[in-house]
Length: 355
Ligand SMILES: Cc1cc2nc3c(=O)[nH]c(=O)nc-3n(C[C@H](O)[C@H](O)[C@H](O)COP(=O)(O)O)c2cc1C
Image (cartoon, rainbow, N blue to C red; front, top):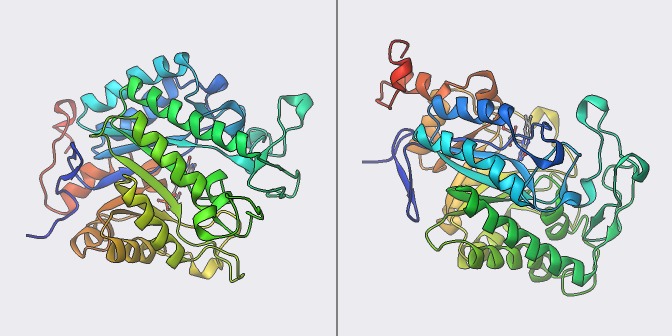
């Protein structure tokens, strides 16, 4: 029998109760990188609402890996302690939870979105951003190119944060390697102009991400799933841009190094033609990556109905359905979807009279 939206899925030793995933969404509500009551309610209510897997917002591995001074972090013990009760609450509802680790690279050092998200200068708490090369990603600042020693230190920062994620009780780790952030700044030829072992050829441009995957695999238990979010394409026709065939090739390498799941998002340095941003527009990326590599894939982007979500799994286009804004609108989407699809799913006893 083919799988459907409410079929369980096993990834290493982790079993998800269904295929619905809460997509990472930055909340800009974490002074000093600390999660708090907002996150308990925000993530906790989606767990109550029945998602199989929650992926936290992008969580920085070092203070200068943030977008703003309000991003979540996992670079110290206080942050581990702050995550623990949230992780435990989510798990007590029968959901699993992964932390999304990232580094913003040349897109860092911005003011809070409500203050305009402009480049935050050094005298206002900002920092000099670093990237694969000296590039200007937000038109307001030019990043410095990371030295090889700095790249190696960042790989160690990711491994240390992954170790802290294990201490915090997370079920899995996702690396945010898309949306124009640091890993993407390295693998896309649009932003990587290096001539050393981290630039030029495909193998060199993916080296930072692959080295990080290897370091994380050594830092976490063998049974713990490792996920990666990619920008499957750059939405650019330029010769040096990143294309879907590159994502397929990269996924095959990541698989060899112990990555279990790839979620196929897109863009980060430019936007697609607005007329192309239609329901399910990124699904073909997940479908192609899955078909060519056999890896477990997540489809994301403008998926808003139970029928769309179910069809993605039934048709085999994707294994996981990753929802962002629809879950902001309705934390109980999974419980409603089960009703709409005439399927059974566990309902919290406190809510039995509603579903
Ligand atoms: C408020 C908000 C914050 C986001 N933050 C992140 C993030 O931290 N990490 C990430 O990978 N994607 C982030 N995204 C992108 C979403 O995870 C998702 O890929 C995108 O919104 C498309 O899915 P949707 O159409 O279901 O909203 C964010 C999106 C929104 C709306």
